[in-house]
Amino acid sequence: MADAAQAPESSDMIRYPAMGRPRDSRRDQAILDATLSLLTEVGYEQLSMEAVAGRSEVAKTTIYRRYRDKAALVAAAVRHRSPATPAQPAGKSLREDLLSLVKWLARSIAEQEVGLLGALFAGMRNDARLAQEMRQILRRDETAMTDGLLRQAAEPLAPGAAALFAEVAPAVILHRIVVAGKPCDAAFVAHLVDDILLPLMRNT
Amino acid sequence: MADAAQAPESSDMIRYPAMGRPRDSRRDQAILDATLSLLTEVGYEQLSMEAVAGRSEVAKTTIYRRYRDKAALVAAAVRHRSPATPAQPAGKSLREDLLSLVKWLARSIAEQEVGLLGALFAGMRNDARLAQEMRQILRRDETAMTDGLLRQAAEPLAPGAAALFAEVAPAVILHRIVVAGKPCDAAFVAHLVDDILLPLMRNT
DNA sequence: TACTTTCGATACGCAACAGTAGCGTAGCGG
DNA sequence: CCGCTACGCTACTGTTGCGTATCGAAAGTA
Image 1: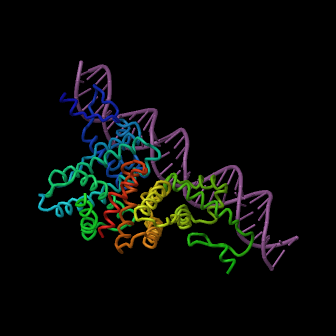
Image 2 (image 1 turned 90 degrees about the vertical axis):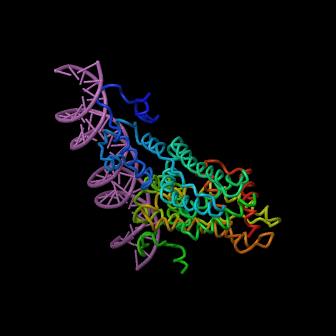
Image 3 (image 1 turned 180 degrees about the horizontal axis):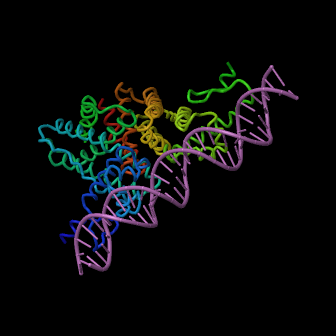
């Protein structure tokens, strides 16, 4: 049992053998970290196994001993990604809660999720399974966030309000970053909260 | 003057010489059409010059005679794209107008813009100029749409209402298609109009 | 110690693709 | 007719990148 916990063995990972020299778990970690960071930086197509090997300071053979091919490696890295939960603010007022939540969300999307989304766009044509996996990951973050909002809100919220928030806030932020190409500064965050989110959530 | 009109010569195009056999404009058209359709199908990275040559039934040399490289070809194709304006509905009620407009917008995004956005994601890292060009194209469609809405609306609209529509509607549609991975069916269109857009625009 | 497996290093084989070059032919203008 | 260019075709160079093979050394286990 304890041994099994030390060898996580995601479903994409090639089975760990019982005999001989054991694998180095620090190399497991280094490979996944390098894959994830490169994925967000350059996207799926531009991600090369050689680059992963270089950044993780590991021989290419060491990667292929663990993962069958590039798709399996990327899937494992995405699955391995830590959830990234927002700091829960002490709910003083609904507006303050939303402001801090949207500010965190904008940072999170700009820094990480845009890269993942690029990979999603590119990969969804070639590998539907990988695309589905990424959608799951992205949704996991968003639901974790709205759950916290619903639990700690300063005002009692209608059940549909949190769902509306989850539907609208990430969408508008993403659209601004990618399509408009403008930064999500403090003015934009305030605009999103005051002109869009608060009217919607109070109206429900 | 008339001759200049027949030879559009976009800025990415290699200059058309004054002597010798003239270029065939049908080949110009076929090259740009093939490039654009392939771009929306497979994205920028996966777009190969060989595929463009094959689909347009043109030799690869004929492409390189016109465009310096792949980036110039794609930029010219994107710039050449026709605006795709929505059918303007006879404004019976604001809700009807919004329903038909959102329905058209959802179809348009699902069929074309997702592919262009994929190219945008991929290209924005390698070629900032190309990314800027694509943003311009995408915005051109959206502003054309909101202008029509503001002009023909059944109810008088606040000046901020059309801007809110342009900011929220494409964002939520895109988010649903890409992140949620669900189709924009009639139920979703009604939900978007009744639960999000109408409350927002009436409140302004 | 014998056996098994990991790990790094390097070199491959293979395919895809960008971009170029040369050749022969087809059109257009002077 | 002559000069110029477009066009298709084929072949070619150079690069990139996936995935494999091999070898020797290291590190566990029986």
